[in-house]
Image (tube, rainbow, N blue to C red; front, side, top):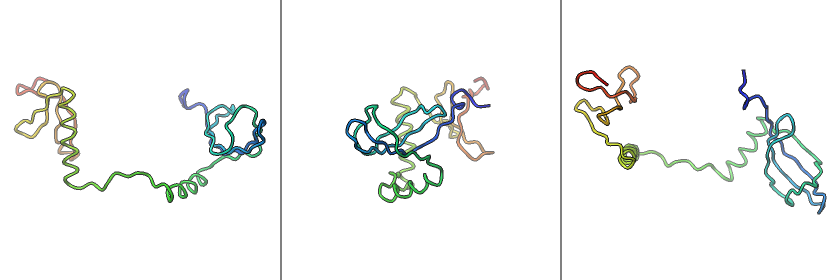
Length: 144
């Protein structure tokens, strides 16, 4: 069952309009719901002033999006993070610990390698999933 935010289906369109004041052509992209309500972006032509008449409107489907994306990616590649080196991964860990410290969270390391605030939370190695995970802090007497 769709939620209220999902109940309206939106579609993506390119449109070419003619401005009623200047006669200039406008190219835009818009996301509209089934009632024609939504938002858009003027790509070219005079600013929209409410006097435009739509001359051509076409819905953009997944195939169109892939083709357009290939043109955009060729000219304007997405910014990717630099290749992670082993040192940069360790730096990320240090940065996270520094951010915790700056936020007032004291992080200690227990003898078994657990990272903890010695109050409520710990980061432990889960042998079953072979991943680090957050867990409630256990005191030596077993109380949390």
